[in-house]
Length: 420
Image 1 (cartoon, rainbow, N blue to C red):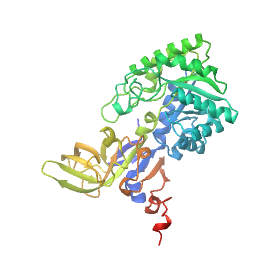
Image 2: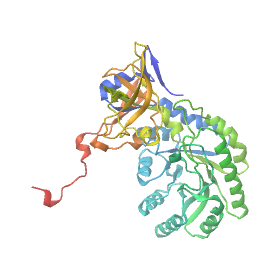
Image 3: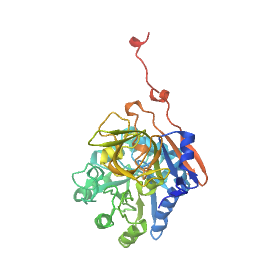
Image 4: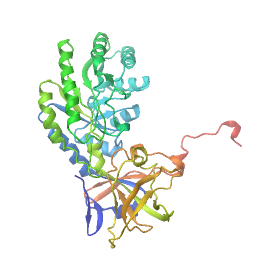
């Protein structure tokens, strides 16, 4: 479900014409629907109301401060993977006791930051990280809440780059070795073992991989409790997919119905880390057509957004639907590559895509861009990052200004021997 629809042949976000936003802020820009965002969050809340739970939005999907504050006001926690994401979550008013910290490479200063503000728990990815957290907690005279991230060796059936639950992936501790790590953690004086964590991948469109993983996790929690290790939280991670093209991902309610019987026998509070499923279809990237080009073997539609603005097509060969902001009068279509201005052959938003006739100056909406869109954007080719705009009802607000050329050189300095 999302709040982007045509009215009288023109694309709207809730009650705002996309064209009106483009006239105000220029192109390219990201446009978000606040109603879609909150509706998706509430879908998770209602789906899991039958079990104690905490929904921690995955900041890596979209860390925009306005969207985070909106979710925070709804009661969301935060799944973070860096000190910068912790800073953003706190700045948005999210309760530290609703923050969980994942990631294989936490630096000492990041660990200390998390311990200082008192987050709920760190998801520990290795034995050396466990000892590093214990040392930092000892020096700070605090106890660190932790969960060990176990790798259940479940194939989530997703793209290799976003699969995280197999033994060959860099994430987590093999579940066969995890009991030994928990026994080590229990002996440490400055950590409190409160949870077990997993995350098997992203853009998963079936319930079965989640069920298989939760079955292994609940069984493992039983083994831990038999050893006298009292686990309070089961963190199943995120990864629920969305519709980009013709996928039919399950509704959170279907996922809940499948795993609730397993969870209830564990007696634990469930932690979920959805990102894409909340933000993905809540946003679009709006771009303007610049030129046509025909190379005899290929037809190209060149637009003003590129791979630095939306990396997913280039990185994953990901599909995003592309719609004209104003429905064309002609029914004619042509097959084109939709490409950007970046100096890379991998700079494309779509390949061999059947598109309606588009004229230079026409606006296009790249759908499903609310997750892993702006959050993965860069300044490659010295391109300023684009504006971000959020809609609420009949109003829109620029929640991140377009960068300027001066922003590109912020922080740069010349050595003395180059000055003058």
